[in-house]
Image 1: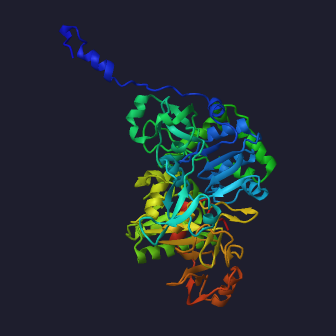
Image 2: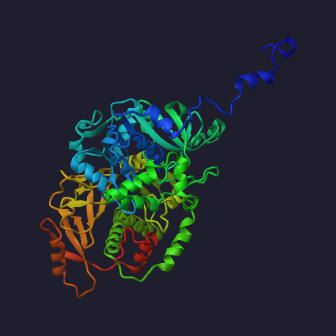
Image 3: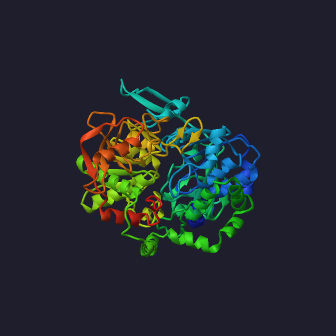
Length: 600
């Protein structure tokens, strides 16, 4: 380099000219919701709707405004079609849906009439996968490979239903063994909502990451990204450890505050981030409206079709509601909530049928963990979730080193009172690790170091322990696998909770969502069923009694009357007394409104 006195540049000017890192960098891709959707989406496309912890509802709402009742024949791909997402089907946007779950998830999981009608009349094709295998299909496409191996799906009805996208093949590295392979799935376009991004689309996300970002990375035409706010590239660099999407993947960036509502966005203690929690009241309102077509259409019109912009949508939400959701996302908000509920609860009330089932399931889980040394408990939804929480709390109190985890990326959390929902925001700050589905379901549940006890619910169960939560073909759609198939195929052992009814306890389930190989225990609201060592049939091993005067033969007869196969009864048969008061207190603290526990 020439010296300054010889006519060359000053060293300071040279360094500034060539090595300065600008505060803003890259071509701006910022546009409105209307522009983003109209510019990049056209009829016939396959659209991936991303699910981290929140969902891109602002983008979905705009998609519906532009294509409502126009029969665009989209193939919609999403980890779960839950809550207000039913409007996509109601509005005739979908030719086909590819997912793991079709139904309502809050306050309790259950079928939704919009999806059920579309399933029954055949207007929409529903393709079923599990919560691990759907992201694996997207991951394969993102990696540019034809497919990826998995332990899931085998032994379920999904294996036959998806024979063009799932295959059991010879393991090339372990002769004589078979392995499942899922085919890659490449969408045409992807939708995601992030915390923030710069104008070029480099985007920050806070954990848990749910299905991850494979859909965006696999998409043929890239990603439409909505964000809480647009920031400088300098801000992105400062938080680069949270960047999960690079700008080159993104086609358009839309600033849409609260664009994940009615789902939420977590902050994980980052001071620049203002979190907001899931809007349970909004989700329940949509669920109730779905029972009546006229009410549902009015609800959709008010919340989705009429607001022309995100600003108008937020005006309808109102300032007070927005502030409430932001306050509810605080880690300590549960304390005031449980105090308020606790003062109004009858803590000494007799137990409900659901409370007894959950308490007994939890005690069985405690016994199994102690006997077999499992280190992790994978909590399913609903009653299975509360049983897992109670088992974890009991084991920890007794000094056992065990952790509880939830499928979208929660690991090692201490369940907080007041809210029994599996993905309660107040649980996140207590997690020892926040990750994603692949880590939880692919490694910690079914990896080589797994020591996992799974807990799942069921729509139906049969004498071999096979579980159905998907469908009663050809006319009735339940909900789907979610993570149940992955839990059943990956866990060392599984406990199932299900209410005792003849329509639920069958000789053979009509659709196998989760094979019963690892299901060793089923707990109903009347008794306990277990598989004896080396056997593959559930045997009645215990019945619920209220006192020593109860007649065991009468109890067995009542159970048999609500069971679709001729029961084998173990001798001796265990007499299971009512739940311990402390178990009831803990359960009621977790679920003070009786959403899972019932109010009888």
